[in-house]
Length: 187
Image 1 (cartoon, helix red, strand yellow):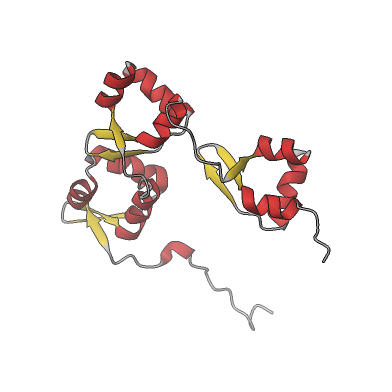
Image 2 (image 1 turned 90 degrees about the horizontal axis):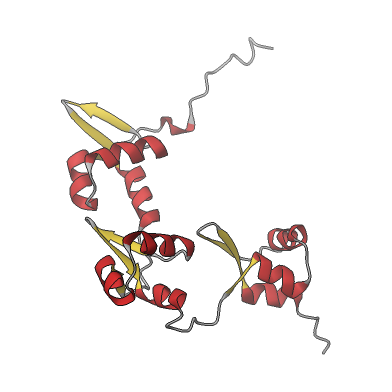
């Protein structure tokens, strides 16, 4: 049997040659980050690197993919700086960080400056009224349709109902879930 089918060593999937590379200096310039940060993120996310003539080269595909995930939402146009938040709401720096974390407020970074979504911050503070939510949280859907968590996840999975992850919370598309549970129409 072995003579007919000799053993062939399998190559790992990531054995594909990486030809497009960034230098550390290019990453620092393009994304405005520190060199130590590059090494930390590369280690955490297993970003491939190579050395040549004293320079470190990083996989362009992996770096671009990482920063694409971290990019802010393009639909958000108005932002608060930390100084504006301190002045407007009289909050300390640690209070701002805690508030932003607990309310999952989108942020964007430009060099050392961090900006927070004006719309989301105002809604969380109660200044602005939120738009009609497009998604149910898991507890809201469970309560509305009188389901257990397992039943809800079963329906979502097997009927391909759209869901998103917002921070540590899973949300289910309101329109699809309502359509699934509406009574059948007799014509």
